[in-house]
Amino acid sequence: MKKLVLVGTLVFVAAIAQAQVSEGDEHWNGRAEGHQGGVAKSGPIDAAIAAYQKAVAQNPNDLAARWKLLRAIRFKGAYVATSNDQKKPIFDTAKKAGDEALALVYRQLAAKGLQSASKASEKQVADAARSLDGAGEIFFWDSVSWGEWALAYGKMAAVRQGAADRIRRESTIAMLVDPKLEGGGGARVLGRLHDQTPHVPFLTGWASSREAVKYLGDSLKTDPSNKITRVFYAEALVDNDSGVKPQAISMLKEVVSTPNDSKYEVEQAAAQEDARQLLRKWGVH
Image: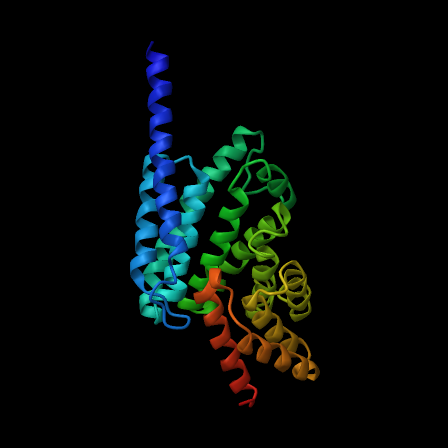
């Protein structure tokens, strides 16, 4: 009898958590409401974050609630906050949520037989994580959050804290779990990391503009319409070889002139502004 009561309680708790995830999804889908270009209003995304936080509290073992929480916090930091002073506490929160989510993934991987996942190779982790729904997304969104944190606090500060190595490992795992995740997201983050990471001997000597072009090109093949990837790719092309600037300029002009996907209105509007800034930097008006 006690066992039946326990099972019934667990099912009830899971149902409540799932309802809260669904509520969070509704607010997430409305995140562009009232936006101005690449800057979103805080109301919809704050509501999404609150719903996902409740879902995590209700069912701490739910990977979907955790990765969606990471995604929502990152959106707030990237597209609602407009200064580093505003972004820093948001991405500090993202780091904490990411640490907790990764700890859960590692525990679940250990239950599946992968001990010391934090020390295993990227391929070993990815092979095991592929059987956990939501694990790849957690690696991906944590890597994105750390990348945003690095931009807010400064690239050299991030290097000293080991952020570059963490982003590199997690984006690689995400890419290996599913190359198509978030429109080639793992390769996109990895390529951007190679392009933007300061080359510091013995710390980030692996950073390579050639690798940046390779990974961003791979990401673009997965999702040719992704404006964020196109901007990153254009910048990486010129960083690697200034002789291809005309090709990069053409790519950025197309980003600016073509309509945005309504599902990613804020994100793509922000990418358009990044494209305009790059064009101005290169003397194109």
